[in-house]
Image (cartoon, rainbow, N blue to C red; front, top):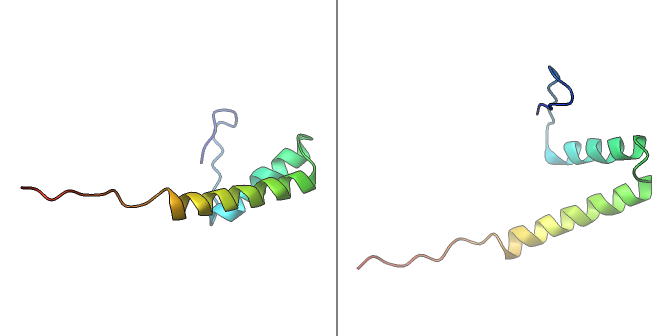
Length: 66
């Protein structure tokens, strides 16, 4: 990933959990959140994502061509 606020810098992560941890830590270090709120938010995001995959992201219904 690249950012317009950090020209020439490219960041890479091995999986989404590592990315989420880095974002949570950055928000703590910036003083936006406490560690507890970052953990709660990360856990909540994971649960919402799992719910969306299981309940919302279903195959589209198809109709047979006549």
